[in-house]
Image (cartoon, rainbow, N blue to C red):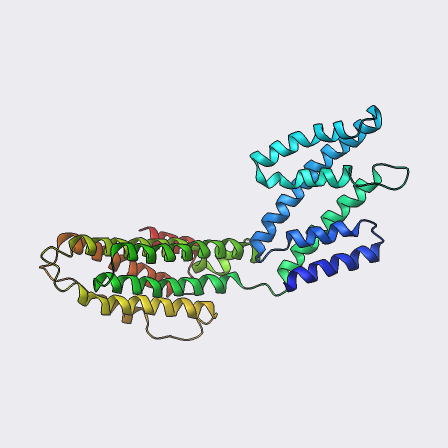
Length: 332
């Protein structure tokens, strides 16, 4: 709300200071383009700019045809048809039709019919530029912090999912619902990384390498967790299941430790001083199955243990770690 109001106010101030006659279009553009995140603002600004340019070209041709042929509405309808088709095929071009209406339908003053077009386009671009600047400067939330906090919350939810599966407390449909909720968090993490690239001007891999690999890491952890839950659900009525419920203490310790580590990263304190539990504390607590367990349980638990080790190595890596090395670590 604050960013939107600041963007609109700045457009009005700049328009008044420069004597722009069509300042209203700058205000409307700022209201449209300013979004809740930098990434969304960039996407809307890109669509606005491309649509405005296309609409301006078509609008200029339409004004010229009107001056030459003397028709008004037939020329507008002919000009609008291709823009409506383009908006249907590529929704990002939806602003082209709006621009055509702005430059063609609204009355113009003065002897030069092209001058209002220039003024209106200037106002639209002013609104786009102000919105982008305001999105970076005014009260924008750190995407890095939000990404790590979401990852921490996701680790805790996976811990609860696994506890429910190991304790055989819930139906499979309920476990799937938990998985769907975790998957939505994964989408949020992807959005946070995309926005963090914008915030850091493409230097995210140098500044926050762990964040760049976080989506792949969390996707892998969620896949392993559901694989274990499925194996438990499939084998719960068969022999060799005894002892599985006792796995939760060690696995839960790992999930909660990694969640805490993500929260420390979110606070920007991951490398200030040693935090407990450390890497060896987490790894030493990872449980193993007895020899009488089902073969498929041995397989899925081994996968989960392996990826918990990778997650621990990544989230507790040194500040000098490179994004490429972390990606290789996850992909091994």
